[in-house]
Length: 338
Ligand code: NAD
Ligand code: UD1
Image 1 (spheres, rainbow, N blue to C red):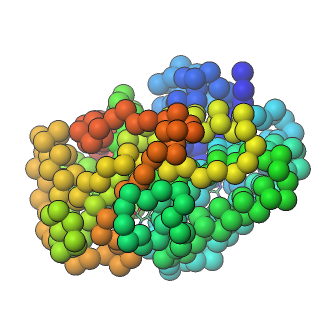
Image 2 (image 1 turned 135 degrees about the horizontal axis):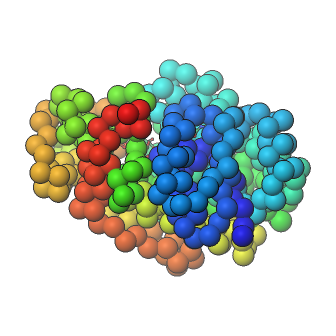
């Protein structure tokens, strides 16, 4: 049984990926400092899968702890989710973001190198495409960043490419996520932001659950079919399954490759809102407000490379994403904190 070390495994994408890893027969060791997640999520994973997870509550910047973990367990590969992800917060606290995300990854990579663990799957983001003028975007699009969060992702990508250049025995998959939404269809794990959500879907589900009053739609005069921003929403379980494909890939190849994880389809804010209302039977009050700084009109993926090389394809449509997001939120109106 192969052991996978999952950093940030208590978080939204990490919990969903851990479930898929356990179901595929991997052993999972999680390191998470619970800065944006709750330990209860791990118990829910164990109930859902009937399997146990080894959890270390601690920080990827803690070299001694990594030393302890890497000397205790025989690790096949690392899936590296741990990081801070709030764009606005990264603008007001850039040093915190560079320290947590960039310096944290540096410590992790150094310790992996020391222990000869040279397979890693890294959570990057479509944010590395900056403000693209056309979509779909493929992996060869020029990279740029519009905020410190995005720069941490770009810097880590560069670090990984340099690492492979220096030592071609590394196997590195950089996964550029588009907009993950939805939840496991059991309704027992899902997205549970600590603060008022920044992202669209958790905002919608919290309005539906009565925790927030109304949705603000950021702008309705973009050059899109209805004037609202268009994004490539992807079911978090499809995203999780992309990590299993990437793990198989790094198990069989050396190199450094970036892959888009998106559906290739774009939906506007109003499209998503309407589908959510239809699938949940809830009415979501909303008002149109001004644009949010740094937002692009439209971005969606070209996922051909992931299909061709990883053999990965999405299975869930936008209706399933909305149904599953609502099942999680309606079963857990206050998230894990209940
Ligand atoms: P999340 O906040 O739910 O999960 C991240 C986890 O990492 C949390 O459990 C947090 O406690 C942990 N963590 C943060 N810093 C840590 C540290 N220094 N040491 C140990 N643990 C730490 O976020 P998520 O949505 O699951 O995102 C996972 C990864 O995917 C992040 O790197 C994020 O930047 C990236 N990503 C997310 C999205 C998205 O829309 N959710 C999009 C693109 C990329
Ligand atoms: C945002 C981040 C991106 C990050 C991603 C995942 C910005 C500028 N971009 O992407 O870097 O990788 O989250 O964490 O913050 N919207 C509303 N009302 C809301 C929230 C969002 O109308 O309350 C709109 C947005 O304008 C956008 C769409 O919904 O058109 C999706 O927004 P969001 O879920 O925040 O994702 P991104 O902006 O794509």
